[in-house]
Image (cartoon, rainbow, N blue to C red):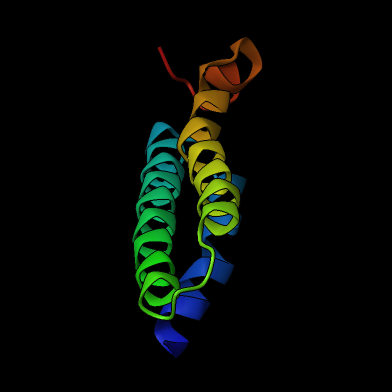
Length: 88
């Protein structure tokens, strides 16, 4: 897990470079992060179901976080980000 932690800490510094590749790397990382939130949701919901505990609130909270994570790459579609990172 140490390697994954270091990768998560380094990824935001990729934005220092104003290139198309850095923007795409960040977008892919955010989508992978969203997939990880979905995996986490399934894992914890199964545990709560096995223990006969309520799971709906957990699903709503983590689901909203996952949706937000999937929508975050859309920030690169704004005019200023397209200009900064030379996106079309």
